[in-house]
Length: 416
Image 1: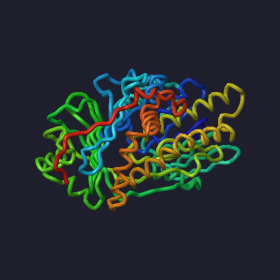
Image 2 (image 1 turned 90 degrees about the vertical axis):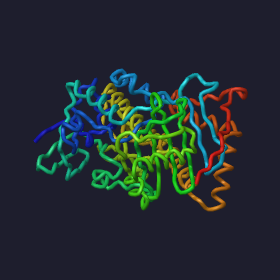
Image 3 (image 1 turned 45 degrees about the horizontal axis):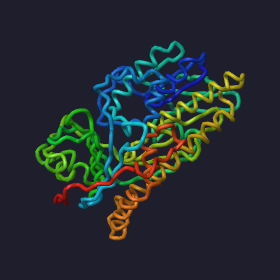
Image 4 (image 1 turned 180 degrees about the vertical axis):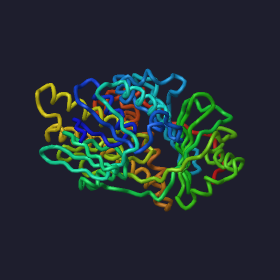
């Protein structure tokens, strides 16, 4: 029977990052992943491009990940605009008057995962075991036992679950989760466009569908169209010329002609938040802890923050001669991560529910919310702070009144 200090279930971004965070310790870490080793070693593009905050950039630099990513794969995000319905009014965010020039950075999921894998395999104390399915998990005061579908059993001092938002190991441990199914599907793809995006992200809450454009380098963007799940197949199978025209129209003609690049990917939208993030010698990380709606682009950032917080507290315990799996250690992580994730989780869900509600009162409230956001300084400060995470989740510094982000108008187009 194999014996290790820490078993990590899930070799995605959160699980592998956690392995990187423990690479400078004497802990023996085993990462279990259902995918093949080939898929982990050479992750393929899956349509998802993540907005990385300044705090996440700092964590990635500390782990040695940032320098592994070619600069051509990192696109700066300098501004963001939100549009409601067919209105020409926008809620606008930028970094004017702040200490940074970018709100964040856009990097493809597969590029991030490649960098993390390349980093973690250099650690002498971390092993990645592929094609593993966990069928049993139990913990007590004496340790943890993980059973695989192959019949192999692994003993550990502690288990970290970082599999996915529908985590089977979370259920095995009897941890409940709050779940919200939006009944919608996000269709993601890349597109070339005729007019420059000026490194500005656009979120267009049209009636019946939502379109988002995330600026990549050059006249190319990552585009997300969110529709009721019943309509997803129509968009996925739409003839390219018609699809291009539909996307261009949905973006209000702002970027001229659009051209689909590559294939389209579909992701059903379900938000999940575990009601607690730890148990005896057991912790939830990444999507297994919090699976976010992508509209505020905080899913990867929360996962990266969580693993860094847990690893830091575990190292402190080791330095103090305490068990790294002790209840106070795991409780500390749980508390800090809940403080970081709960407001964003519920705030994001509230925004999505409001801006996909098409009753007349909701439409009026949507328009009022955009104007309120532009004209009430604390709202702007708070949102921009969450977008950038300069200084982390705390330490919000308020700009002077004469340096507030401006609001703007865009040309009016005929949009359904």
